[in-house]
Length: 224
Image (cartoon, rainbow, N blue to C red; front, side, top):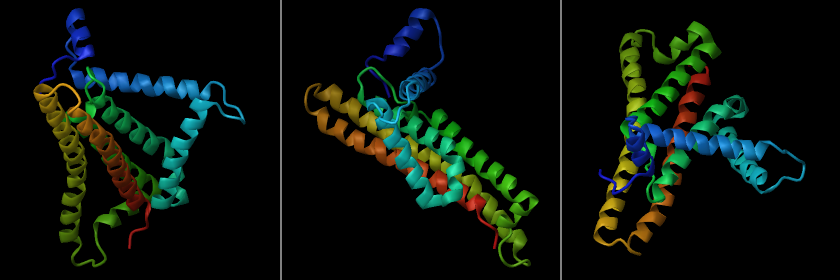
């Protein structure tokens, strides 16, 4: 995929740096989130301003989704889930700004996010149950435990691959289609694709976040 012009890539060239667009735009997303968080939290009041009110709605929505999916115990993981959701959403949405590149259209970024979810799932599982967490991989029948263990391991290893490719495929595909439309007809025609991009950005954020919550909720459950 070739962009006609990327602002931060041009800046890299001027400075003689070679980080790659997915790295520099990941930093940009981080800066955006840090600035918004600072503005929302620096003057917290009972009568919230616009920024505080907006962030309260966003965090409240994520917290409600966590409670519905994981139960009350899931609230402890709100910082992790909310950080993932906000990072992915902002990364997806900046694709709609000319000259910016979505980090989630790169396989490396998505794999890093997926491995984070994969690692935290099992860390949380062992923290909650100790060695007994291994019962999740044994199945209900002791005789079939060796076979079930292999199947479960394959299934768990497939999770980060699935999370990575799903997000990457949708965002990379949207980028390609958008670039083609911009190349053919630079004015007006790409607008419907950009509106669809907003929908895709929210849907892919929701899917990745929901699956992450389901995986973590599964690790918190007692083995049967």
